[in-house]
Amino acid sequence: MAVLKWLSICLTLFCQGTAASKPCRWTQFRLGKLNDVSIDLLSDMGGLFPLMCAEENVEQMFPEDLYKNTEGEDVSVVALEAMRYVDQLYNNSLTPVTWNRTKLNMFQNVIYRQVQNLELCVVGGVWESSGDGGSVTLKTYFNKLNTVLKEKEHSACAWEIVRKEIRENLVQFKKFIDSRVKR
Image 1 (cartoon, rainbow, N blue to C red):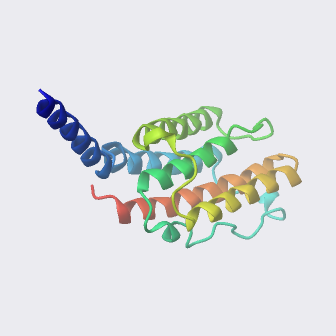
Image 2 (spheres, helix red, strand yellow; image 1 turned 180 degrees about the vertical axis):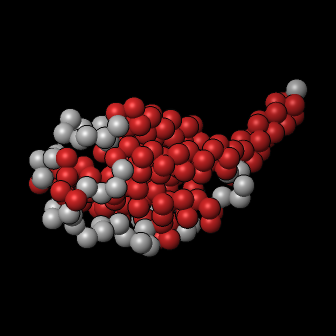
Image 3 (cartoon, rainbow, N blue to C red; image 1 turned 30 degrees about the vertical axis):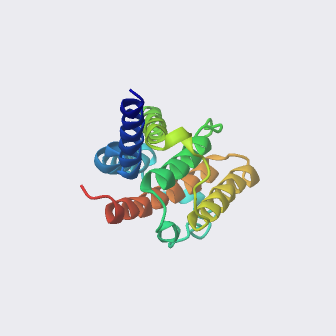
């Protein structure tokens, strides 16, 4: 009887270890598609960058090598961290924006769905990533975006700058996903 219990425990631990080492199926099959939807919604909800905001526009803040610095980290962990930051950012006051509200709501919903599904992929809903390559840079980048919003008092032009930056972030994130996830 003791041998049977021991065998049962070993089999359970082996199965859990095997499942944990495999990439999350949702990340493999849905993350890239929802990221594409997010990029399209960001583009469609506000159109081209407004001329009235051209003087307030800042140089691109997104560090091109951000996702390259996360080489050894799990895609789900990196994705969860990035999507949580985007979700938090777009839960700020959006009253001054003139974007298509339906598409904005759809964008927020898609980001929220990604966070929810990624939390299921990442055991225990890890917030901080395991490495220090992209995590600190990602946090710094989103702090800069929050600073732009605060300094410009959450104006419509500040949100346009953030929308442009987040779109670029998601385009680079797509490249990261495509290079790491086998479809």
